[in-house]
Length: 467
Image (cartoon, rainbow, N blue to C red; front, side):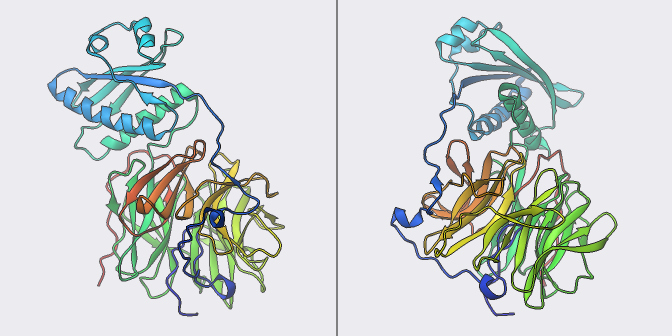
Protein backbone atom coordinates (compact mmCIF):
# COMPACT_ATOMS: atom_id res chain seq x y z
CA UNK A 1 0.00 0.00 0.00
CA UNK A 2 1.22 3.48 -0.81
CA UNK A 3 2.60 5.28 2.22
CA UNK A 4 0.18 8.14 2.89
CA UNK A 5 -1.21 9.86 5.93
CA UNK A 6 -3.58 7.72 7.97
CA UNK A 7 -7.21 7.89 6.92
CA UNK A 8 -9.87 9.24 9.24
CA UNK A 9 -12.62 6.91 8.12
CA UNK A 10 -16.06 6.28 9.55
CA UNK A 11 -18.98 4.74 7.67
CA UNK A 12 -18.77 7.86 5.55
CA UNK A 13 -15.29 9.37 5.21
CA UNK A 14 -12.69 8.19 2.74
CA UNK A 15 -9.35 9.93 2.91
CA UNK A 16 -7.05 7.07 1.96
CA UNK A 17 -7.52 4.32 -0.59
CA UNK A 18 -5.77 2.85 -3.56
CA UNK A 19 -5.44 4.61 -6.90
CA UNK A 20 -7.61 7.71 -7.19
CA UNK A 21 -8.75 7.27 -3.58
CA UNK A 22 -5.29 8.00 -2.20
CA UNK A 23 -4.91 10.65 0.48
CA UNK A 24 -6.74 13.89 -0.25
CA UNK A 25 -4.20 16.61 -0.98
CA UNK A 26 -4.05 19.57 1.36
CA UNK A 27 -6.63 22.19 0.45
CA UNK A 28 -5.47 25.79 0.70
CA UNK A 29 -7.61 28.32 2.51
CA UNK A 30 -9.31 30.11 -0.37
CA UNK A 31 -11.00 33.30 0.83
CA UNK A 32 -13.10 33.84 -2.29
CA UNK A 33 -16.68 32.86 -1.47
CA UNK A 34 -17.39 31.96 -5.09
CA UNK A 35 -14.73 29.25 -4.94
CA UNK A 36 -16.51 27.68 -1.99
CA UNK A 37 -19.86 27.47 -3.75
CA UNK A 38 -20.54 24.20 -5.56
CA UNK A 39 -21.97 24.70 -9.08
CA UNK A 40 -25.48 23.37 -9.52
CA UNK A 41 -26.09 23.27 -5.76
CA UNK A 42 -28.41 25.66 -3.96
CA UNK A 43 -26.68 27.40 -1.08
CA UNK A 44 -28.92 26.92 1.93
CA UNK A 45 -28.81 30.50 3.19
CA UNK A 46 -32.49 31.18 2.60
CA UNK A 47 -34.63 28.82 4.63
CA UNK A 48 -38.35 28.35 4.96
CA UNK A 49 -39.74 30.72 7.56
CA UNK A 50 -41.36 28.72 10.35
CA UNK A 51 -43.08 30.04 13.44
CA UNK A 52 -40.93 29.56 16.53
CA UNK A 53 -42.83 30.04 19.78
CA UNK A 54 -41.56 31.59 23.00
CA UNK A 55 -41.73 29.56 26.19
CA UNK A 56 -41.30 29.93 29.93
CA UNK A 57 -40.15 27.33 32.43
CA UNK A 58 -41.09 27.30 36.11
CA UNK A 59 -39.54 24.33 37.94
CA UNK A 60 -39.56 24.28 41.72
CA UNK A 61 -38.14 21.92 44.31
CA UNK A 62 -40.25 20.54 47.13
CA UNK A 63 -37.48 21.40 49.62
CA UNK A 64 -34.04 23.03 49.66
CA UNK A 65 -32.25 19.85 48.52
CA UNK A 66 -34.70 19.28 45.69
CA UNK A 67 -34.50 22.96 44.74
CA UNK A 68 -30.75 22.65 44.12
CA UNK A 69 -31.35 19.66 41.86
CA UNK A 70 -34.22 21.52 40.17
CA UNK A 71 -31.88 24.40 39.35
CA UNK A 72 -29.45 22.02 37.66
CA UNK A 73 -32.28 20.37 35.72
CA UNK A 74 -33.56 23.80 34.69
CA UNK A 75 -30.15 24.72 33.23
CA UNK A 76 -29.86 21.48 31.23
CA UNK A 77 -33.40 21.67 29.88
CA UNK A 78 -32.99 25.32 28.90
CA UNK A 79 -29.90 24.50 26.85
CA UNK A 80 -31.60 21.47 25.29
CA UNK A 81 -34.61 23.49 24.17
CA UNK A 82 -32.34 26.20 22.78
CA UNK A 83 -30.31 23.63 20.86
CA UNK A 84 -33.50 22.07 19.47
CA UNK A 85 -33.75 25.22 17.28
CA UNK A 86 -37.54 25.05 17.54
CA UNK A 87 -38.20 27.77 20.10
CA UNK A 88 -37.72 31.49 19.63
CA UNK A 89 -36.52 32.19 23.16
CA UNK A 90 -37.11 31.54 26.83
CA UNK A 91 -39.07 34.36 28.47
CA UNK A 92 -37.67 35.43 31.82
CA UNK A 93 -40.27 35.10 34.55
CA UNK A 94 -41.14 38.10 36.72
CA UNK A 95 -41.49 37.65 40.50
CA UNK A 96 -45.22 38.28 40.20
CA UNK A 97 -45.71 35.40 37.79
CA UNK A 98 -43.26 33.19 39.65
CA UNK A 99 -45.37 33.46 42.79
CA UNK A 100 -48.65 32.50 41.13
CA UNK A 101 -49.81 29.00 42.10
CA UNK A 102 -52.55 28.94 39.49
CA UNK A 103 -51.78 29.70 35.87
CA UNK A 104 -53.22 33.04 34.74
CA UNK A 105 -53.09 32.65 30.96
CA UNK A 106 -53.92 36.31 30.39
CA UNK A 107 -50.83 37.42 32.30
CA UNK A 108 -48.63 34.95 30.46
CA UNK A 109 -49.94 36.19 27.12
CA UNK A 110 -49.08 39.75 28.09
CA UNK A 111 -45.41 38.85 28.60
CA UNK A 112 -45.27 37.09 25.21
CA UNK A 113 -45.30 33.43 26.29
CA UNK A 114 -46.78 30.81 23.94
CA UNK A 115 -45.97 27.69 25.96
CA UNK A 116 -45.56 27.45 29.73
CA UNK A 117 -43.84 24.55 31.49
CA UNK A 118 -44.53 24.21 35.18
CA UNK A 119 -43.32 21.46 37.44
CA UNK A 120 -42.14 20.32 40.82
CA UNK A 121 -39.23 18.09 41.76
CA UNK A 122 -39.43 15.95 44.89
CA UNK A 123 -37.75 12.94 46.41
CA UNK A 124 -39.76 9.77 45.86
CA UNK A 125 -38.38 6.67 47.62
CA UNK A 126 -34.76 7.90 47.54
CA UNK A 127 -35.05 8.94 43.88
CA UNK A 128 -36.17 12.18 42.29
CA UNK A 129 -39.43 12.54 40.41
CA UNK A 130 -40.53 15.48 38.26
CA UNK A 131 -44.19 16.25 37.76
CA UNK A 132 -44.34 18.42 34.66
CA UNK A 133 -47.24 20.24 33.02
CA UNK A 134 -47.31 21.84 29.58
CA UNK A 135 -49.72 24.76 29.20
CA UNK A 136 -50.85 26.09 25.84
CA UNK A 137 -51.03 29.78 26.71
CA UNK A 138 -52.48 30.84 23.35
CA UNK A 139 -55.52 28.58 23.78
CA UNK A 140 -55.55 28.85 27.58
CA UNK A 141 -55.47 25.17 28.37
CA UNK A 142 -53.39 22.42 29.92
CA UNK A 143 -52.10 20.26 27.06
CA UNK A 144 -49.84 17.59 28.61
CA UNK A 145 -48.94 16.17 32.03
CA UNK A 146 -46.06 13.83 32.73
CA UNK A 147 -44.22 12.27 35.64
CA UNK A 148 -40.54 11.39 35.15
CA UNK A 149 -38.02 9.57 37.32
CA UNK A 150 -34.58 11.19 37.53
CA UNK A 151 -31.42 9.87 39.23
CA UNK A 152 -29.64 12.11 41.69
CA UNK A 153 -27.53 14.94 40.23
CA UNK A 154 -24.31 13.13 41.09
CA UNK A 155 -25.38 9.80 39.60
CA UNK A 156 -24.32 8.51 36.20
CA UNK A 157 -27.67 8.66 34.43
CA UNK A 158 -28.75 12.11 35.63
CA UNK A 159 -27.95 14.18 32.53
CA UNK A 160 -29.26 11.55 30.11
CA UNK A 161 -32.56 11.36 32.02
CA UNK A 162 -32.97 15.14 31.88
CA UNK A 163 -32.14 15.14 28.16
CA UNK A 164 -34.89 12.55 27.64
CA UNK A 165 -37.39 14.88 29.36
CA UNK A 166 -36.33 17.69 27.05
CA UNK A 167 -37.02 15.42 24.06
CA UNK A 168 -40.45 14.66 25.46
CA UNK A 169 -41.20 18.38 25.67
CA UNK A 170 -40.25 18.77 22.00
CA UNK A 171 -42.60 15.90 21.15
CA UNK A 172 -45.40 17.44 23.22
CA UNK A 173 -45.17 20.80 21.49
CA UNK A 174 -44.22 19.88 17.92
CA UNK A 175 -45.08 16.19 17.59
CA UNK A 176 -41.53 15.63 16.33
CA UNK A 177 -38.53 13.82 17.81
CA UNK A 178 -35.85 15.64 19.75
CA UNK A 179 -32.17 14.74 19.90
CA UNK A 180 -30.97 15.72 23.38
CA UNK A 181 -30.84 12.15 24.77
CA UNK A 182 -28.03 11.08 22.46
CA UNK A 183 -24.25 11.15 22.19
CA UNK A 184 -21.64 11.68 19.50
CA UNK A 185 -18.70 9.33 19.03
CA UNK A 186 -15.66 10.72 17.26
CA UNK A 187 -11.92 10.28 16.82
CA UNK A 188 -9.65 12.65 18.70
CA UNK A 189 -6.32 12.82 16.89
CA UNK A 190 -3.02 13.34 18.66
CA UNK A 191 0.08 15.16 17.50
CA UNK A 192 1.69 11.78 16.74
CA UNK A 193 -0.98 10.97 14.17
CA UNK A 194 -2.70 8.36 16.31
CA UNK A 195 -6.30 8.68 17.37
CA UNK A 196 -8.70 7.42 20.03
CA UNK A 197 -12.49 7.24 20.17
CA UNK A 198 -14.27 9.66 22.49
CA UNK A 199 -17.94 10.31 23.15
CA UNK A 200 -19.72 13.52 24.15
CA UNK A 201 -23.30 14.48 24.97
CA UNK A 202 -25.41 16.28 22.38
CA UNK A 203 -24.87 19.58 24.22
CA UNK A 204 -21.06 19.26 24.28
CA UNK A 205 -20.83 18.12 27.91
CA UNK A 206 -19.64 14.87 29.48
CA UNK A 207 -16.61 14.23 27.24
CA UNK A 208 -15.35 10.67 27.77
CA UNK A 209 -12.58 8.56 26.32
CA UNK A 210 -13.62 5.12 25.05
CA UNK A 211 -10.41 3.57 23.64
CA UNK A 212 -6.78 3.81 24.68
CA UNK A 213 -4.79 1.80 22.16
CA UNK A 214 -2.01 4.27 21.41
CA UNK A 215 -2.40 3.71 17.67
CA UNK A 216 -4.62 4.69 14.75
CA UNK A 217 -8.32 4.18 15.46
CA UNK A 218 -11.00 5.03 12.90
CA UNK A 219 -14.61 4.91 11.81
CA UNK A 220 -16.78 4.70 14.95
CA UNK A 221 -20.29 3.48 14.15
CA UNK A 222 -23.21 3.07 16.59
CA UNK A 223 -25.43 0.02 16.66
CA UNK A 224 -29.16 0.63 16.30
CA UNK A 225 -29.75 0.11 20.05
CA UNK A 226 -26.89 2.44 21.04
CA UNK A 227 -25.20 -0.26 23.12
CA UNK A 228 -22.27 -1.07 20.81
CA UNK A 229 -19.70 0.77 18.71
CA UNK A 230 -17.90 -0.80 15.75
CA UNK A 231 -14.62 0.70 14.59
CA UNK A 232 -11.37 0.06 12.74
CA UNK A 233 -8.12 -0.14 14.70
CA UNK A 234 -4.47 -0.69 13.80
CA UNK A 235 -3.70 -2.14 17.22
CA UNK A 236 -2.62 -5.46 15.65
CA UNK A 237 -0.56 -3.67 13.01
CA UNK A 238 -3.16 -3.60 10.22
CA UNK A 239 -6.65 -2.06 9.95
CA UNK A 240 -9.12 -4.60 11.31
CA UNK A 241 -12.70 -4.35 12.52
CA UNK A 242 -13.72 -4.50 16.19
CA UNK A 243 -16.90 -4.12 18.20
CA UNK A 244 -17.11 -2.77 21.75
CA UNK A 245 -20.12 -3.37 24.00
CA UNK A 246 -20.49 -0.14 25.99
CA UNK A 247 -22.53 -1.75 28.76
CA UNK A 248 -20.20 -4.66 29.53
CA UNK A 249 -16.86 -3.50 28.15
CA UNK A 250 -16.58 -6.69 26.08
CA UNK A 251 -14.61 -6.32 22.86
CA UNK A 252 -14.82 -8.59 19.80
CA UNK A 253 -12.79 -8.86 16.64
CA UNK A 254 -15.28 -8.98 13.77
CA UNK A 255 -14.97 -10.83 10.45
CA UNK A 256 -11.62 -12.32 11.37
CA UNK A 257 -11.68 -14.55 8.28
CA UNK A 258 -11.80 -11.74 5.72
CA UNK A 259 -8.03 -11.69 5.22
CA UNK A 260 -7.84 -8.02 4.21
CA UNK A 261 -8.06 -4.45 5.47
CA UNK A 262 -11.51 -3.49 6.72
CA UNK A 263 -12.94 0.05 6.83
CA UNK A 264 -16.05 2.16 7.41
CA UNK A 265 -18.48 -0.13 9.26
CA UNK A 266 -22.21 0.59 9.26
CA UNK A 267 -24.82 -1.35 11.25
CA UNK A 268 -28.00 -2.55 9.59
CA UNK A 269 -31.12 -1.17 11.34
CA UNK A 270 -32.13 -4.73 12.31
CA UNK A 271 -29.04 -4.96 14.53
CA UNK A 272 -28.20 -8.38 13.11
CA UNK A 273 -25.92 -7.35 10.24
CA UNK A 274 -23.10 -4.97 9.49
CA UNK A 275 -21.71 -3.60 6.22
CA UNK A 276 -18.16 -2.40 5.62
CA UNK A 277 -15.50 -1.89 2.96
CA UNK A 278 -12.76 -4.44 2.28
CA UNK A 279 -9.50 -3.43 0.54
CA UNK A 280 -7.48 -6.15 -1.18
CA UNK A 281 -5.94 -7.00 -4.53
CA UNK A 282 -5.93 -3.40 -5.69
CA UNK A 283 -9.61 -2.59 -5.15
CA UNK A 284 -12.08 -1.80 -2.39
CA UNK A 285 -15.54 -3.42 -2.22
CA UNK A 286 -18.54 -3.35 0.11
CA UNK A 287 -19.53 -6.49 2.02
CA UNK A 288 -22.29 -7.49 4.41
CA UNK A 289 -21.83 -9.78 7.38
CA UNK A 290 -24.25 -11.56 9.74
CA UNK A 291 -23.35 -10.48 13.27
CA UNK A 292 -25.89 -12.72 14.98
CA UNK A 293 -24.45 -15.92 13.48
CA UNK A 294 -20.88 -14.64 12.92
CA UNK A 295 -20.90 -15.82 9.33
CA UNK A 296 -22.10 -15.35 5.80
CA UNK A 297 -19.75 -12.73 4.36
CA UNK A 298 -21.29 -11.48 1.09
CA UNK A 299 -20.07 -8.89 -1.44
CA UNK A 300 -22.74 -6.37 -2.44
CA UNK A 301 -20.78 -3.80 -4.47
CA UNK A 302 -17.44 -3.38 -6.17
CA UNK A 303 -15.50 -4.34 -9.25
CA UNK A 304 -12.03 -4.52 -10.82
CA UNK A 305 -12.08 -0.96 -12.19
CA UNK A 306 -13.63 0.91 -9.29
CA UNK A 307 -13.54 1.32 -5.53
CA UNK A 308 -16.74 1.32 -3.44
CA UNK A 309 -16.88 2.06 0.29
CA UNK A 310 -18.60 3.98 3.12
CA UNK A 311 -21.97 2.20 3.22
CA UNK A 312 -24.92 3.78 5.04
CA UNK A 313 -28.26 1.96 5.33
CA UNK A 314 -31.65 3.57 4.87
CA UNK A 315 -33.82 3.40 8.03
CA UNK A 316 -35.87 0.52 6.63
CA UNK A 317 -32.71 -1.37 5.68
CA UNK A 318 -33.84 -1.77 2.07
CA UNK A 319 -31.33 0.59 0.45
CA UNK A 320 -27.76 1.68 0.91
CA UNK A 321 -25.90 4.93 0.19
CA UNK A 322 -22.21 4.59 -0.55
CA UNK A 323 -19.22 6.28 -2.15
CA UNK A 324 -17.70 5.10 -5.42
CA UNK A 325 -15.07 6.39 -7.87
CA UNK A 326 -16.71 4.81 -10.92
CA UNK A 327 -16.92 8.26 -12.57
CA UNK A 328 -13.21 8.83 -12.00
CA UNK A 329 -13.70 10.86 -8.79
CA UNK A 330 -15.55 9.91 -5.59
CA UNK A 331 -19.34 10.40 -5.80
CA UNK A 332 -22.35 9.35 -3.74
CA UNK A 333 -24.71 6.64 -4.98
CA UNK A 334 -27.80 4.72 -3.83
CA UNK A 335 -28.50 1.06 -4.51
CA UNK A 336 -30.50 -1.83 -3.05
CA UNK A 337 -28.97 -3.01 0.22
CA UNK A 338 -28.11 -6.39 -1.27
CA UNK A 339 -26.50 -4.86 -4.38
CA UNK A 340 -27.54 -4.01 -7.91
CA UNK A 341 -27.73 -0.95 -10.14
CA UNK A 342 -26.80 2.33 -8.47
CA UNK A 343 -28.24 5.85 -8.88
CA UNK A 344 -26.07 8.97 -8.61
CA UNK A 345 -26.92 11.35 -5.74
CA UNK A 346 -24.09 13.89 -5.62
CA UNK A 347 -23.79 16.75 -8.14
CA UNK A 348 -22.07 15.81 -11.38
CA UNK A 349 -20.87 18.38 -13.90
CA UNK A 350 -19.08 17.03 -16.97
CA UNK A 351 -15.48 18.20 -17.06
CA UNK A 352 -15.55 19.50 -13.46
CA UNK A 353 -13.37 17.57 -10.97
CA UNK A 354 -15.79 16.83 -8.14
CA UNK A 355 -15.04 15.01 -4.88
CA UNK A 356 -17.96 13.80 -2.73
CA UNK A 357 -17.79 11.34 0.14
CA UNK A 358 -19.01 10.46 3.68
CA UNK A 359 -22.70 9.65 3.02
CA UNK A 360 -25.06 9.31 5.98
CA UNK A 361 -28.74 8.45 5.55
CA UNK A 362 -31.23 10.45 7.62
CA UNK A 363 -33.11 8.45 10.26
CA UNK A 364 -36.29 9.92 8.77
CA UNK A 365 -35.40 8.28 5.45
CA UNK A 366 -35.92 11.30 3.22
CA UNK A 367 -32.41 12.76 2.83
CA UNK A 368 -28.73 11.91 2.66
CA UNK A 369 -25.94 14.15 3.91
CA UNK A 370 -22.34 14.06 2.71
CA UNK A 371 -19.43 16.43 2.17
CA UNK A 372 -17.84 17.48 -1.08
CA UNK A 373 -16.25 20.07 -3.29
CA UNK A 374 -15.78 21.04 -6.93
CA UNK A 375 -12.25 21.87 -8.10
CA UNK A 376 -9.96 23.36 -5.48
CA UNK A 377 -12.66 24.75 -3.20
CA UNK A 378 -12.88 23.69 0.41
CA UNK A 379 -15.12 20.86 1.57
CA UNK A 380 -18.69 21.70 2.58
CA UNK A 381 -21.65 19.87 4.07
CA UNK A 382 -24.37 18.95 1.57
CA UNK A 383 -27.83 17.43 1.83
CA UNK A 384 -29.64 15.68 -1.04
CA UNK A 385 -33.00 14.03 -1.44
CA UNK A 386 -32.85 10.26 -1.14
CA UNK A 387 -34.55 9.81 -4.50
CA UNK A 388 -31.21 9.15 -6.19
CA UNK A 389 -31.90 11.51 -9.07
CA UNK A 390 -29.55 14.34 -8.10
CA UNK A 391 -32.43 16.68 -7.25
CA UNK A 392 -32.54 19.43 -4.62
CA UNK A 393 -28.97 19.30 -3.37
CA UNK A 394 -28.42 21.97 -0.71
CA UNK A 395 -25.13 23.27 0.65
CA UNK A 396 -25.41 23.89 4.40
CA UNK A 397 -22.01 25.48 5.10
CA UNK A 398 -20.52 28.53 3.40
CA UNK A 399 -17.21 29.13 5.16
CA UNK A 400 -14.39 27.11 6.61
CA UNK A 401 -13.61 23.50 5.71
CA UNK A 402 -16.25 20.99 6.81
CA UNK A 403 -16.26 17.20 6.60
CA UNK A 404 -17.80 13.90 7.72
CA UNK A 405 -21.43 14.79 8.50
CA UNK A 406 -23.69 12.56 10.58
CA UNK A 407 -27.42 12.95 11.29
CA UNK A 408 -28.86 13.35 14.76
CA UNK A 409 -31.71 10.96 15.64
CA UNK A 410 -34.22 13.79 15.05
CA UNK A 411 -33.35 13.82 11.32
CA UNK A 412 -32.88 17.56 11.50
CA UNK A 413 -29.46 18.31 13.01
CA UNK A 414 -26.09 17.25 11.60
CA UNK A 415 -22.75 17.02 13.37
CA UNK A 416 -19.55 17.49 11.37
CA UNK A 417 -15.83 18.04 11.82
CA UNK A 418 -14.46 21.36 10.65
CA UNK A 419 -12.06 24.24 10.82
CA UNK A 420 -14.05 27.45 11.06
CA UNK A 421 -13.91 30.92 12.55
CA UNK A 422 -14.88 29.41 15.91
CA UNK A 423 -11.85 27.12 15.80
CA UNK A 424 -11.19 23.48 14.96
CA UNK A 425 -13.39 20.70 16.27
CA UNK A 426 -16.97 19.46 16.04
CA UNK A 427 -19.96 21.58 15.02
CA UNK A 428 -23.70 21.07 14.70
CA UNK A 429 -25.80 22.56 11.91
CA UNK A 430 -29.59 22.74 11.96
CA UNK A 431 -30.69 21.76 8.45
CA UNK A 432 -33.98 23.63 8.90
CA UNK A 433 -32.66 27.04 9.95
CA UNK A 434 -28.98 26.88 8.94
CA UNK A 435 -27.85 27.75 12.46
CA UNK A 436 -24.38 26.38 13.30
CA UNK A 437 -23.12 25.97 16.86
CA UNK A 438 -19.80 24.63 18.16
CA UNK A 439 -19.99 21.30 19.98
CA UNK A 440 -16.36 20.56 20.88
CA UNK A 441 -13.73 23.15 19.91
CA UNK A 442 -9.98 23.17 20.46
CA UNK A 443 -9.40 19.48 19.71
CA UNK A 444 -8.21 17.77 16.54
CA UNK A 445 -11.33 15.78 15.75
CA UNK A 446 -12.48 13.58 12.89
CA UNK A 447 -15.31 11.35 11.70
CA UNK A 448 -18.07 12.11 14.23
CA UNK A 449 -20.97 9.67 14.41
CA UNK A 450 -24.25 10.62 16.11
CA UNK A 451 -25.89 7.91 18.19
CA UNK A 452 -29.54 6.87 18.09
CA UNK A 453 -31.74 7.78 21.06
CA UNK A 454 -30.12 6.36 24.20
CA UNK A 455 -31.43 4.88 27.38
CA UNK A 456 -29.29 4.86 30.52
CA UNK A 457 -25.98 3.14 29.90
CA UNK A 458 -23.58 1.84 32.49
CA UNK A 459 -20.24 3.55 32.74
CA UNK A 460 -18.16 3.26 29.58
CA UNK A 461 -15.16 0.98 29.91
CA UNK A 462 -11.82 2.36 28.77
CA UNK A 463 -10.48 -0.16 26.26
CA UNK A 464 -6.87 -0.99 25.52
CA UNK A 465 -3.85 0.25 27.43
CA UNK A 466 -1.05 1.32 25.05
CA UNK A 467 2.26 -0.45 25.38
